[in-house]
Amino acid sequence: MWPDEAACAASAQRLAAHPGVRRAFIELHGTLGAGKTTFVRHLLHALGVQGRVKSPTYAVMEPYEMPGFTAWHFDFYRFNDPQEWEDAGFRDVFATPGLKLAEWPEKASDLLPTPDLRIAIALGEGDRRHVSLAALTPLGRELLS
Ligand SMILES: Nc1ncnc2c1ncn2[C@@H]1O[C@H](COP(=O)(O)OP(=O)(O)OP(=O)(O)O)[C@@H](O)[C@H]1O
Ligand SMILES: [Mg+2]
Image: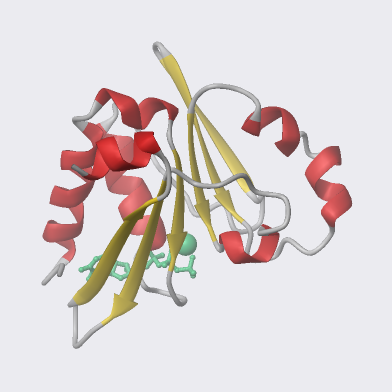
């Protein structure tokens, strides 16, 4: 349970403390305004990204280059053409080591690999969010523990 955004930030900071997060693929599920981008923002800032972390809804993908590793933030909300997967180079991105974060992964589910972690955020009263985390790989279990 995240009673407020500070709790979301604290979860992101705890996850960022694990070195394995730098090679994880994390799916973020939840309705509009649940807090997927907010969690990504806190996670990327905790990993050293400086400046603005914007919602990639229109660009579908935002890359972040950091000393020692790269992160990619996807938002598949408007993704509807599987050809775009090839054309935009997403296949190559998923074959490259680094952190991948995906909002609305269900819109590209046929193309995406199995995530290490699946985070589902549900709206509660006010700022309250009900959050569930599932590990689907050994790396995911390591991150979760
Ligand atoms: N406990 C909380 N955890 C996360 N965000 C919160 C919380 N309480 C309030 N918020 C606010 O909820 C909003 C969540 O918006 P955000 O853009 O992160 O949603 P989203 O899940 O990415 O939606 P979309 O599907 O449109 O991309 C932000 O304005 C954030 O400040
Ligand atoms: Mg978002």
